[in-house]
Image (cartoon, rainbow, N blue to C red; front, side, top):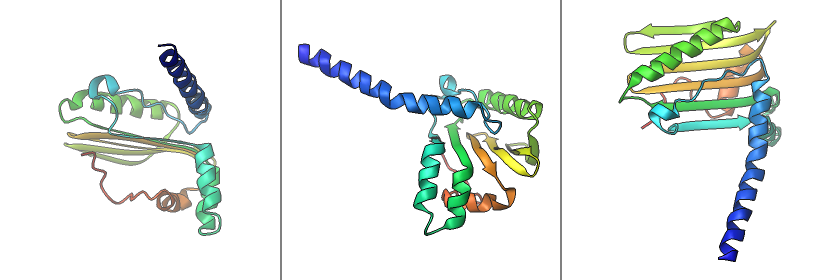
Length: 182
């Protein structure tokens, strides 16, 4: 019994120590102009089907690791502070996701984000916004919603819009392909 309590305490302490840098990193990202809060849809849809939350430390590590093989990607990655992706299947009740989509869109506009791409079809919406500071992008947000899925993507950090395709290739993201949550 004593051993079980001790093990439980050790595991709990280790979990807190491991999660503390992640929480601190998220708090640091929230202070940046390129960060956007998408809210939480877990109460309606459960845990996200896709959840990626990469902070500056890991991005810098990827940049260092790609220094010899791809110097351009390395340079771009070193300027990024975070990449966040959340995707939920919403086929059972798309109304909550569509409401959140509209709410985030309003927040982006009120915070000075510039709409770059807007697709408004009866069964699908796609929005791409950039947070600019002069000629530099401080953040980019991509949002898609249809009757089956909702996807929120936030890239945080200094990025030259001309190099966006290179970043997506460096992250192995196919921006021309469809993202399927099933």
